[in-house]
Image 1 (cartoon, rainbow, N blue to C red):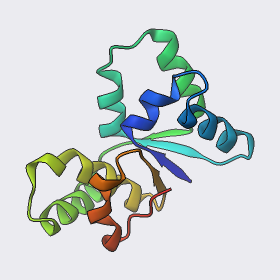
Image 2: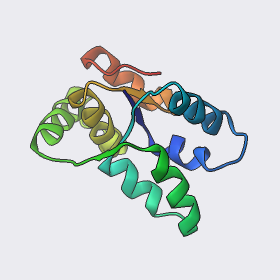
Image 3: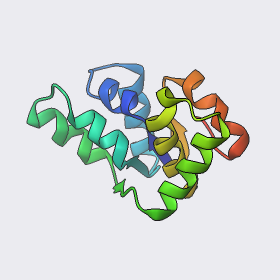
Image 4: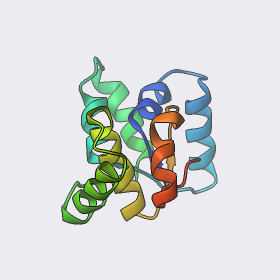
Length: 123
């Protein structure tokens, strides 16, 4: 299972982008793609056209809610990296991916590297 970060969703709507090609390849081989609710919120903030949202949504098997398990994991991650405010949403996305046992596809690897030692696997 692949968990998509916000930047993957944004680039995924660009024709022939590396992200769009990877998403199509994952879809073709039956890889399940999911999105954490915080990433989906960021993506929907746009600007977007409704058809762009529909195209991306067609590839996503589930938008994972940000519930208690995800919040607990995110808080653990956030606190483990000295509570850096700039990483608050990143901790939410990483925590959701870890709780779902999914690999995270992101272009902001440096932002998520601090969470790898806590169980985050990057694609």
